[in-house]
Amino acid sequence: MMTSLEEFRLIKWKHSNQSWTPEAAAQQLLLLLH
Image 1 (cartoon, rainbow, N blue to C red):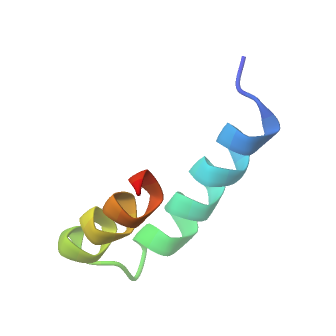
Image 2 (tube, rainbow, N blue to C red):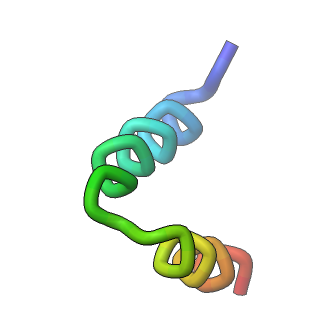
Image 3 (cartoon, rainbow, N blue to C red):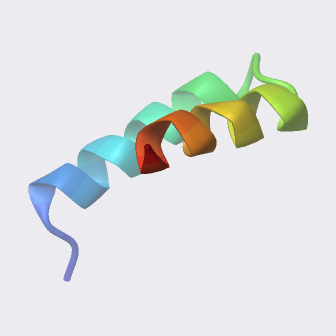
C-alpha cells in the first residue's frame, strides 16, 4: 500500500512524463536525490 507521498509522486510523474524527455526525467530524479 502506497503512502500519500508515493501516490503524489507517481501521479506527478505520470502527468509530467507526458511532456518530459527521458533525459529531463533523469535530471529531475538526480535533483530529488540531492
